[in-house]
Length: 477
Image (cartoon, rainbow, N blue to C red; front, side, top):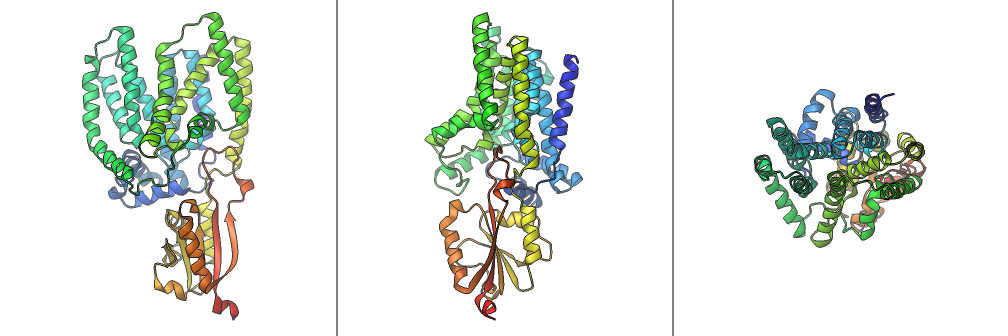
């Protein structure tokens, strides 16, 4: 099979892996939040504290056609995931070589984290695609100063900035790329003035919004208060979590060591732009937000760093391409074989919270006069998306020991749904104490069973507890 056929095979495989089981798991917490925002219309699209409006706007347009099912809400991410594979190939050819590009493409095709992101109704697949596209056309501007590269650069870079707050970290990456290109090829900075000026001008409205939210957070506001200050371990563990399977990670480290020795022995000249751009991707989306988190306010979340995966894959693809053919084949087969383990686990185990199953249990157990109590957070949103319509009027949210509606005190049966309680444990304990005052706990069920959770998942599958309470006078009767 020739080079081009291997490339097309990677795209077909990427599409298959991202479509397989697309609707098997229910929407998890953040995906339910996406659905909740979409149902609010334009006000919901512009209200999210940590992301820009672009993803929600595109999601709104697409779901008017596909519907709000699990599959319908994830179609956009699938499309962005496959498009990212295609753009990664083009970028790697530009930075390294066609051989390195093909290896990087296949590594991205089977990467379980990228597969997961491409099956998630969140903005990260879009952010990765736009980041790759922005870098690709930023490099093209140095060699083709025509209208199309400028327009493509402006649209993709502005798109990154309007997709997520982390999009701002692409700006130092672009500046570094232009500095290297200008120094190496004696290119005037005037080439970049117009496209960069237009991009910044377009970004100003969203920049003001992000700045306001950031200042609110730094002054002790309620924006993203669940993000903890990261440690050095969080910084060092991030690249590991992009693969999250120890034998695979050790093999990749061995690959980098062997490739470095081979390059040193054969005196291979490092591709300055390719190597620098790959490293800067990791610095921009891992190190810089980590430094902001430590010095100013916590903003570091593993999921937000996802564009940095591309930097890892570019360097790994180039490393494979520089090895002798026999050693390269051994590493390639070993990496592919080990990757099958987390891929199999991803498609046979749970990577998302089973809110659909929880809501089904609650709907079945809700009787006349019963009250459903959702602990604070986004739990109510998760339940509302799946509860039967006739059951939704029974639902209310509690955040203290006092219930929201007085009639709760006269409910003969209460079903309480709890999750994500680590940040609000004191409040949750007070609710439990209040319930014990008038009701008797009859049973408790935890979703999912720990044995059903993917051991190689990069996200945390929070346990969901459903408890049933019967009024004490009813219990006595």
